[in-house]
Structure formats: structure tokens, C-alpha cells
Length: 362
Image (cartoon, rainbow, N blue to C red; front, top):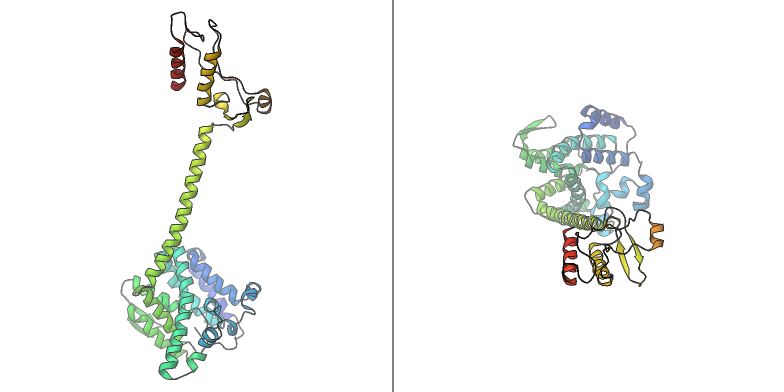
């Protein structure tokens, strides 16, 4: 993070950044890392100024930089969300994005793209909150109001937090800091904090320190547990909604299967009762077929050898739905009739029982 000043004219830093990305290979950059770099670039190039103007007013470093005065005393909370994404000049952008390129590649492969995007979003806000708190504390301890007035912006605070996370999950090794000194990886962020402040005095010491503290809160403190819990709640909610959707979809498919392979239709019988007709059963369900068979057996003429079938659909329904076929129930066994008693003396109840058994077997 750096303190605001007049932006230098140029663009050579942007040219070097695009060359670095091309040499690395755009297809080798994980998606969240590439999108984050692209977002920083388009904000620097003022491509999103029209959109940002409706949220924060005129987008500029002075408008988004974070300080205790602007955030705490003036309650300009939007700065906490936007300060990390604005850079002072193209070289500030170049060094931050090249550093992020290597950290992003390793961490995104470790965490996955979605969680890494979540990590960046949280770190970009919490780092600014911690910086404001550190500035308040420094002003009180050192009796120096300049810390309260100090205003900073840029992605480097997030980079320091990510550096702590990177060294935590990677094996211990010696790391070269700016080609000047080689130190164990677990001390690299502290050495880099001091060296950057010596070489570039305008950088925000408390902003970089805040990034280290956020990284430590994630690797050794409660921040990771809190973030994982929130992510779990959101994931469980999404999974629950997805499971409910799948259950309702499966139930709908099961219901449609029970209704038949073709679309049924509803019609009103002459008695005024509604019923569901299905084309694969001749327009009637199994229960309706059994009930119709029983009614027909009761009203058939004794001695008549004709077969009893459920009544056909109304004429108007047949005209409207040509795919409805006449029902074709299996005939009764040879020697039986639909009357009250057969020639062999079988009772009417026995005939109905046998008909129901044949229908159930079908």
C-alpha cells in the first residue's frame, strides 16, 4: 500500500506487466488469479469509472484511500471495500500484480478457485480494517497524529497477507528477498516489510503490517475457522436448496411416469365426476378399470356371452385427443359368462373375484 500522490504519466509498467503475463502464459494462469489481475488493470485504466461513479462518486486515489479520519471519523465505509483495488501509478500496479501472479498460482491450486476468490475478497476488506486499528494504536502509543491522517491504497496489504499464507502451507525453504538477502521462508514477510520501508519510504508501513497480521490471524488465529464456518453455512444452504430441487424434480418425474408415457387429459363424465385418463390404459387407470368391470358385471344380462369392458371416453374427448384408443382388456376364460351365474354353477361373487384377480395380474 502507498500514500496518495499525483499519478505519474507513462505506461511502461503496464507494457512490462502484459509482457510478463504473456511470457507466463495466459492459459497457465488459474481463473481467479487471472480475473483478479484483470480487474486491477481495468480499474487502473478507468474502464469501470462509469459504474464506480454511481457507487463512490468520482473514482480516484484520494476518493478511496483508507485512513482513520476518512473511515472512522467521517464514516466513509466504502473505502474499506475499494482501496485495495486502486493503484497510484503503473509501476505500483506492475510490482503488485507480478508478485500476486506467483502467489495466486500456488494458493489457487491449493485452495481451489472459488475459495481463493473468497479469500481475496475477505482479505482485501479485513486488511484495511486492521490498518485503521493499527493507525489508531500507533497514534496513541507514539503520540503522533500523523498515523490517523495517513491515507493508503493498493493491493500490497493483501499481498503480505497472502505471503504469510503461502509460507505457512509450503515446506520450509530459504527465500531471496529482492535479490538482496536470503532468509528462511517463515521470516521472509518480516524482512520484506523492513526492506521495502527502507527502499521505498513512501510505502505504508502500517498497511503492510496489517497484511501480515491478517495472514497470521488466518494461519495461527481464529480467522480461518470463522471463514470456513461461514463458507460451510453458505455451501450447506446451497446444497440443501439443490437437494430439495432434485427431490421435487424426481417426484415430478415419478408422477409423470405413473400417469403414462403420453400426456393424459382430464374430462368430466356424464355424472359430473372428474377423472384422469391415460392413453396407455385406454383412457382409464387401473382402479377405474376394476371399478368399471365390477359395475358392468352387476348390470350385464344373464346368459349373455359377450365380454364386459370399461366404457369408452366421451365422443368430444376422442375428437380432441386422437391418440386415445379403445380399451382392450383381456377376455374372460372360455366357458364363463358375465351373468349372475355360469353354466357350471359358479356364483356371481366368484366371477367378480376372478375378474379382479386377472386385472391385478395384468
